[in-house]
Amino acid sequence: MFKFFKELIDSAKEGLAEGKAELAQEAAERETARQEGNAALETRLAASSRFENFAVALAAVYRETFASDLREAEEMQRSAVHLLCVDIPAKEIEPWKKLLARDFSVTEREGAEAAVTEIVHGLPSQPSDDDLALWIGRASHLATGAAAVGYVSAQAALEWLVPAVELAVERFSGWDNYAQSFLAGEREAPGSNFVGRKLLASMAQKLLESERSPWKTVAWPERDSLAELLASRETPRST
Image (cartoon, rainbow, N blue to C red; front, side, top):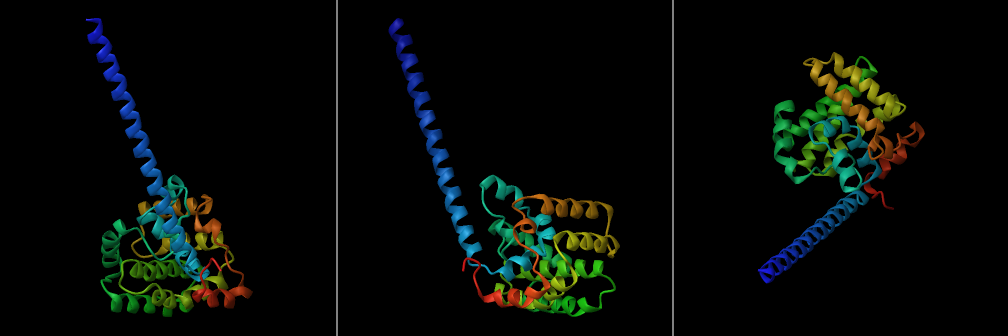
């Protein structure tokens, strides 16, 4: 009888040891996958330009609303790459296509280019800085989103946004100023509603406060450095 219980206890100990070993192996594999994933994203970020980072950050309220990256960046201990680079996670591509079709009736390159061009051409005639900020954000969201889902190259989409970036730098003094005007413009926009306004305001606040946010890590360009920012389109940020 005592031998039976001893064998039972020994067996339980072996099982417990094996279970701990398996858990340790799984944890090690998850950590390796995390590090590899982070490294790939950091490589993509290093290959981006200051212009890309700024242009995508102009659309960060929408990106954080539709596919939050700040929480994952915090959990995975990485940069908020999808708020700085055109790319979005692979799992978000199909939902993003539906968003572009729903909000802009865009399903391919020609439609995206036409829609962005129309918005950008209308920016100088916006009646206020609030309206201007709103439509800069929308143009950036549409252009970078179209590139993210593969309708157009990132380089082409960023070229569409040059006039929008120029106006952003010329008319706003920083992320706080831009965010305030963006939210004010959204309040008066056709189709605006209480729930949407609260959500966007919450996202803007998060972007202004999070240490991993592009609104913390990307400096708002000075007006006299605009030419340098535009010239950076072909220069990876790591150089």
